[in-house]
Length: 426
Ligand code: FDA
Ligand code: NAD
Image 1 (spheres, rainbow, N blue to C red):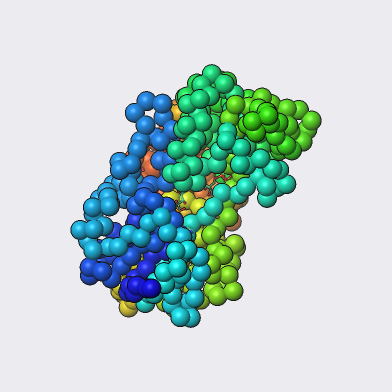
Image 2 (cartoon, helix red, strand yellow):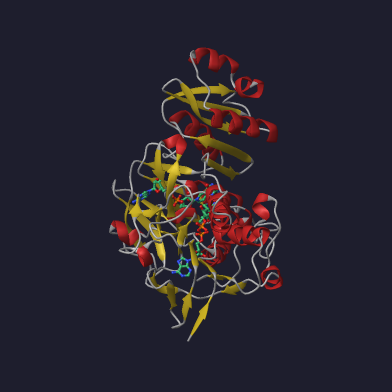
């Protein structure tokens, strides 16, 4: 049993949706393209799962957040795929791949062959078991990667109103879910090993701005430690967490956000890997010329870093996907993928954006007791990173544009004095 396609997108997440849109713009014929996804729904904007999806009032639900609404593009519903002759092979896990033969084998035993493959398998959430703690299967321990996880989290949240949640991890999931839990009237403790939240991006000064607000909403930060075990009731439900520092916290609900691992296993030993991802060149092409990789799973050359990296953010998934399709369809005219890293988050009524890289000296600007402030990172005499909370559309555009230019900075105190005016003036 088997089917053949010219183009196959493996994975049905953010990158898959944006790749599909780009294929139709470039002119794909009916029946040439398919998307194979383990998920049972058409590609959607994953960021909604830790934000609008968790709201107690008028929560976001599909079909409202199918791709590509996140970039103000067309919303690709199952009907759209049908109208464009794109086969959605949903609820289907690919269990092995043979890049030499150009075939994929599904868990149901179907062989699907391709001329060009785009790997968009994203990543999976790291499990506590990988850190030696058991209990992830308990009914009130939640992870958050896909729609099924988010639906389960909402169910557990609804039975925990007025109760206690323990959030494990102080990264993106931890911060966004903690805010949503507070909005759902659940008492929150956050446990993480670092001295402050968002350790990969925030400086202590930026982190303390957000932490102070979370504290004002009743969030209890437990830093510098990790959990060692759960306390269970006789039904196997978690009622508390024991921490390595000897303390414990009561829990009606536990949310775990301790990082991800890219889904590379199908291609290990067949394609070159790098930085835990699938290595691609500046055309998003892997070590096999018929195979491309995009989104969270791809390790691609990033000029501002001077090396290849994986980026676990939606903008990179959207843009790398579109670029790979262009490189496949217009091989002679497609330029290098020249990507400026862009991260953002929205929690409570806050909204920040970051562009570039966060190494070097930090120069702060704006009012850290007010609604808008930011920071620049200056490395080897050039501005290479910018962070802004509470900016306008024009201000965000300005920090993005200027960061891309990497202007020379001779005088840090002058940059500090000019603050946001520096980028707005350029
Ligand atoms: P993605 O994970 O979206 O999709 C991978 C797909 O591949 C899934 O459908 C999966 O089922 C499928 N798959 C994997 N293996 C398979 C197999 N063997 N067979 C079949 N299918 C397979 N970023 C940001 O910049 N701002 C934000 O606010 C957020 N918010 C956010 C919230 C939450 C809850 C999460 C989990 C993540 C974010 N992100 C984010 C990160 C962002 O969502 C992420 O970078 C993109 O979803 C990556 O897109 P991909 O398409 O690469 O993977
Ligand atoms: P993350 O890498 O952002 O944060 C992981 C956190 O886990 C670290 O900050 C650390 O505090 C903590 N940690 C690590 N080991 C731990 C342990 N043993 N015990 C307790 N804490 C531990 O990962 P995440 O928050 O799980 O997010 C998952 C993915 O989703 C990431 O790729 C992220 O980029 C993405 N995401 C992005 C956004 C956004 O860009 N706004 C929002 C949500 C999710």
